[in-house]
Image (cartoon, rainbow, N blue to C red; front, side, top):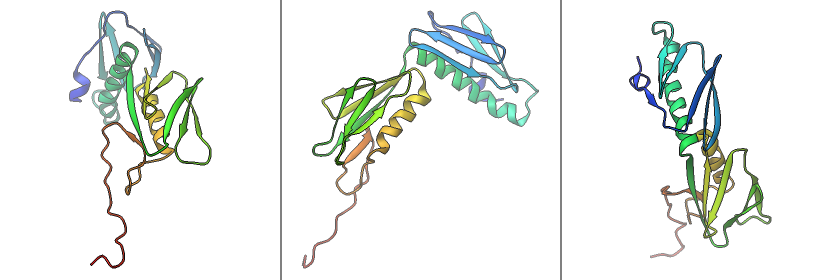
Length: 182
């Protein structure tokens, strides 16, 4: 059995967890999320705890899904109660971002600004024009949105310009050596 899968999940007050058929739904102040639970895993909801266990005596697939399902449910509960966020930094002269409506407008050195429409359930905020924070209840959607924003102009290794995650280390390369540098 999975060591992570054995740990029961505590449900904070104000969060509702319900199972309807093979669909688990979690509702809270941050929104509502759903998960389709595979048949190889059983989910038991009792009071303020959720337990996940493999269904068929420990077959390979049920053992693989045991810890995964527990982690997905725990992330859903954390998402609707606290939420997830990713921070991005924009580095470069003239590079900046701003929020317009339900989208993010990025000025990244191209001839025209790049407009990114935020997915449903995801919010973005810009601080000092060079710091973007992506927030939401679904951990996977937040990470995907941050990765798509970063992909518009990845950090390049010579000057370090581009969009990077907060705290990301960019390996810098030495530039071209000049002629006659004796």
